[in-house]
Length: 438
Image (spheres, rainbow, N blue to C red):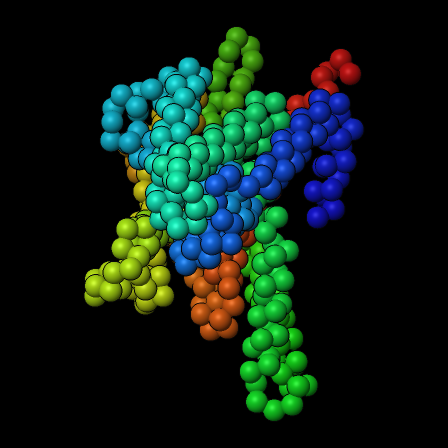
C-alpha cells in the first residue's frame, strides 16, 4: 500500500504524468455527472421496479453502470454494448481470416479493428436500447405520441452509450490506463457504499429473525456482517496474490562473437501469468447464462408456460451453477487460445539465439510452452470459479443481495488497479531514466 502511494506521489511530481492523471480524473468525473442525467419520457419509479425483476442480469448491469440502470439515466446501459461488441469481434477474429490478417497489420490494423468494434458497439447499443424500451414500455409517460416517446428513449440510451465509449477513447488517447476498464472501475466504486449499506441492513434483518431477546439478534447480525467483511478481505488478498503470480520459463541465450567482442550468454525467462485471461471468462459466462432469463423477461413476461417458468427461475436453480462452472473453464481455455500464441514465442526465442534448457528448439519448445500454459489455464479456471462461486454461496445462505458480485467486482477492481499501477511505473521509469552522461 505504501509503495502504491509513493508511486502516485512521484507521478504527480512529473508535469506530464500529472497532466495525464488529472485528465483521466476529469473524464471519470464527467462520467459520474452524466450518470445523473435522467432519460426523458420515462416514469422513473415504474422503470426501476420493472428492471429490478431482471434478477442478476439487472443487478450486474446496474453495478457496472454505476447505478445508472435503476436510476433510468442516459448511461443506463453503460459500457456493456461496447464490451459485448469487443467479445464478438474477438471471437470473429478467430473464425474470419480477413479480420485475423487485419489484427496482425500493426498500428493501422489496430485502428481498423477499433473502428469496427466501435460501429458494432453502436449497432448493439441501438438493438439493446430498443429491447429495453420494449420490455419497459409500461414505464413510458402516458401520452398520445408513444411512438415518438419510444424513439426518444431509444436514442437517449444509444447516445448515452456512444458518449461513454467516446469518454473511454479520450482516456486512451490523452490520459493513462485503459479507458473502458477505468469507467467500469468507476461504476463499481460508486456502487460500493450502497452495496455496503444494503448488506448492513440485511445483516440487521437476519439478526432480528433470531428467536430470543434483542441482544442475541444484534450479535447474530454483527457476526454475519463480520463474516462478510472477513470473506471479502480474504478474497481481495487471494485475488491480488494470484493476479501477480507468474510461472517463469527459463531461457538461455547462446554466446556470439562479433569482431573481438563476445555478446550474449545471459539467461532470462518468459513470464506466464497464472491469471492470463483476467475477468473475461466470467463476463462471457455471465452474459451467456443471463441470455435465457433476459429473453423470457423481454418477450414472455406474462407467460406461465412450464419451459418459460424454468428459464425464468434458471438463475436460482442448481443447473445455473453447474453450467457456470463449466463455462468458466471452457472460456478460460478459449480466451487463452485466442490471446496466447506459443508458436510466435518459440520462433522469437530461436531468432534471438535462445533456448529453453533441456528442450530442443522448434516444435518441442512450442509444445513445452503450450503444455505449461494449459496447466496454468486449469489453475486460472479453478481460481475464477472459486472467487466467483464462494460469494454466490454466501449470498444464497445468508439471503444478502449483491454478495454474489463481490468476487467479480474484486477481480475487476484489482485487475484495473494493477494495470494502472504498472502503466504509471513504466512511465516513471521512462522519464526518470539516466543515461551514461548524467
